[in-house]
Image (cartoon, rainbow, N blue to C red; front, side):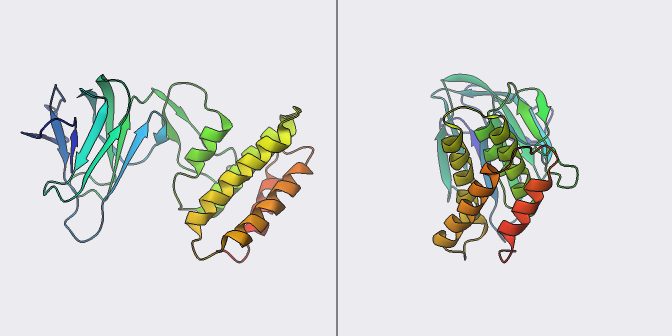
Length: 235
């Protein structure tokens, strides 16, 4: 895979390489597995899962603020506006160097790490590239950024919603809680594609009502109970 600016690809530097750098109009390339299965390329701004090997961490010059990704045969081409024109920090993570099936391209990542899970029995990958405290909606998006370990993801999501709900005494508490539950349902639509929307909405309604009835939710037991009940019959 080749990535860099939207300028014409005249040459590229393969990574990992100590000489690799992105200058104006420059491009990098990462070796992926042969054409036996798809390669997942994800573009992140800042916070991202702490997964894989960092194959590159340096400066990327994007004249129009867009990141360009394509395969070496130019069968697949992708361009995404990622910020203002100019230099951006680019971090490239690969699951397997020289035979990648997953490549994470991170723009403007911070220096700090954050644990997604507050429950030791349901660990999730940490989040890297954090530069400022994240809002609950952003944390939920990171919890639901993948579909492995569905129970751990749901337990941590429900635990976050319970903690926020218990502490929220504003008039918009119910609206905010329902919006968070909606994030769960939208993740479930991808995680369990054979389950109809009406059934998932029913599950969401149960989660919403049960969370609303919790007055103290700091031990994680409520989250585990609600999650197990919600996942019954789905996995």
